[in-house]
Image (cartoon, rainbow, N blue to C red; front, side, top):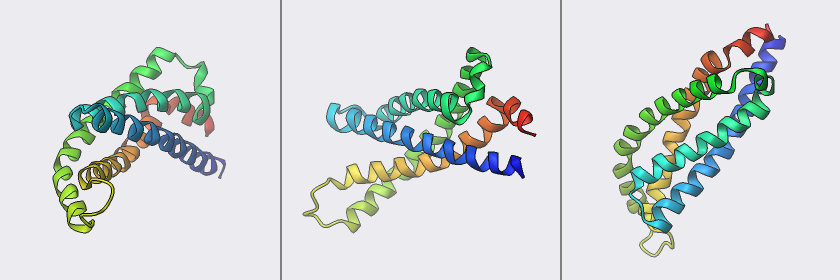
Length: 154
């Protein structure tokens, strides 16, 4: 029973860290794409990278605090590999759904709506891919990056 509670608590903490990473991701995505004018795919990659650093720090400090005794370089490398593979999942999925989501936003929103449907479409597409990658990141990091900690809980 203890393992189930710990697993649930860890998932909640991981998800909360993910929410903070999502705020970082959306904030930088919009900064880069809307305010600076970078291409959306480049903006997505850059914002994802910044969010990964945020997530690694908070997962190491809060979700898996006992991981601070593990080798930082090994852990960061594993977390980075999982994140890059998450980016490999995220980027083509974003490209695949970007145009249909923008089209849906254009069809659903009034022409007088104050926010450009393209911006809304980009953000909805980004939200979708973030949810998909959240599950990938949690399960793979739990089973690989932090697997020694899971064994210690049993």
